[in-house]
Image (cartoon, rainbow, N blue to C red):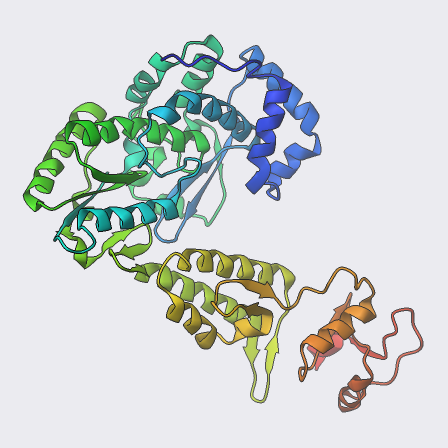
Length: 461
């Protein structure tokens, strides 16, 4: 089957459609906002460049993430991300029917939680609901993205593309070397700490794909599709699934799993020039629990991986230090909107991960161990749904009304309400506090403020 293009692949309408898809999770980034400021002109220029084949990828941004381990990321410019969407959505028309069902990375309708659910199902089916002892073989490819051979990748893609424009764009992106034109953002010296075998900057010529781009994730699936076909149709392993370069096989015979491991090792070495990561290899009874994608998975229950919990607690400790200060006789809570939104996003993200495990006691313990969360957020009875207590309804557009709403929702607390460079008080109940602070009543003003003092007075005090 050859891949034929849809009409007007590089037309303005096509680019605009893919632009809308591309910006969904990137709209508030600087590059996305800069592109959006003149989106029509940018899309017209991009369409012209693609149609006359003068397009070339822009400079990338390189940075290094430190958790859970050092990882080098090359992020494409937003303009190039639109092009990635155009190409990947076009190639998917051929490759999606070809990919096996149980490949779960970077595919619509798949993902981490679907993979974990499927592995749970496999364990139950293979063990006949716990009545038969089964084993799992978990394998990982050593430095996968850094060892992908571009020539092999191109030979996998090329036979299934018929039209010159798709062939041209695909070849351009496969062989593009983002290390030739990039800017580094992040801690000085962190890039030099990257191990050589994990850095695109130190890859062998003709090898390596940047982590983080849509086309790289898609190309990575194409590259390992031949492995999927080999395991399913040559080895005839019924219970097999893969998420990126992490894959699991189940069987009731550990010797057979061991033999499959060596056949897989040989296949990867000879066909794809890849090597298994022996340090990540596991061949154990499934009853021990499969450590996969952040969970410990057994037939009848699922736990959250210890490293995930430790990372969450580390982040909560950071937010607690930033949002709460304990003095001798009182606590001060800082309603820093930007920081609270970061905290909210972090907690909600982890709760989304925890909800897919048997973790009620763990979720409950977070509110017990980090009481500052209750000051800012309300949680439902299942400790899953988060609601911010500090968000004033939009109908209260008057400063005084906002103040009264907050007083009502934080009874028994002393509220310092900042307006510009002043703290102001609006409620009759504030008179006792004003007297203690030695404040005199303000003159009549539009906001209805009764008392106030400048921020500089606080720092001097």
